Image 1: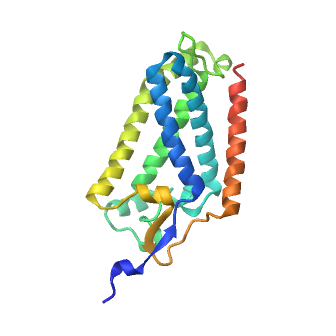
Image 2: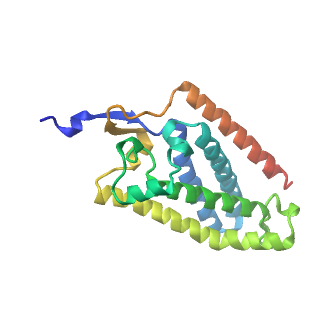
Image 3: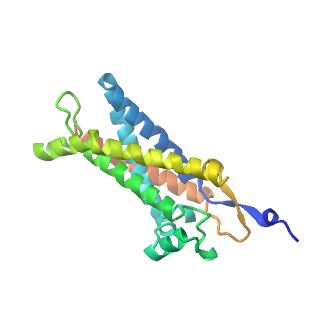
Length: 229
């Protein structure tokens, strides 16, 4: 009888742009929260980290449309029936739930991107009535700016921290409970999967496209930031 692991092969799942995005987002999110907690002169860095998060989220939205196979939203935007089958342990082999983001993991991705987008949007119009004003504050009413500031400093921050904690807890659960390391594939890009599993494109053309998109996103964010001058 053949040994099951011998039928596995190394498959590129996470392309380099997705991996780079993931770790940069983790670092900039930590930096953003830490600088806000420190306050004072560190708020200069809070804005810088915020603009970096803005750039990264914008890039991920674009990359979710044109990136590698398993990074595209179409690969992990699941119908309710698919989610129910997954929860019942009845996933079909052709659904490849063990490759990229499974149905529960997809909720985490969309929730994090959504909350980060709200944090960025609220920060752009926020005013703490001390010395820190978002670059788009002058385009909104004082009432809206006040609600945005309250969300940004309170509800939004705590929801974001809760989602990050859940994300880390899920990684530890898979590592300790299911003996599946989810961190390594996000570092090296590959997973040991059955032969014939579709791989993500990760060549020079793919990476050049990512650089172009990142540059466009950074330029757009720089322009938005300049509106506060």
